[in-house]
Image 1 (cartoon, rainbow, N blue to C red):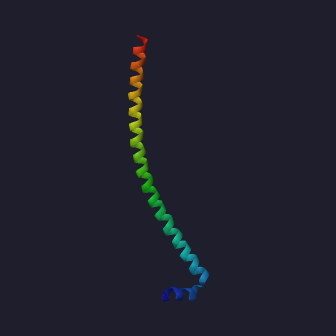
Image 2 (cartoon, rainbow, N blue to C red):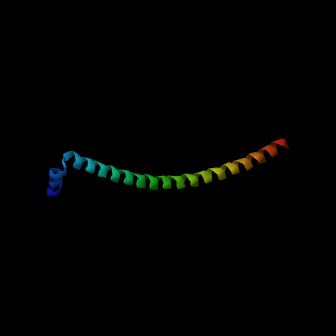
Length: 74
């Protein structure tokens, strides 16, 4: 705490507050980038797996519809 007060005496309150704000923004920016990136990667992998399941279900439905169409035509 004394070091902060010494810095305020030497450099002035506005400079110390500016440096503190920049440091807080730096920490927030890089923390949020890491967290968002990891969360996005997890969501992306999950959605890719779900999309593969949906594609398989659609292909099954297509074959069933084709079978139905052939049965109806006969």
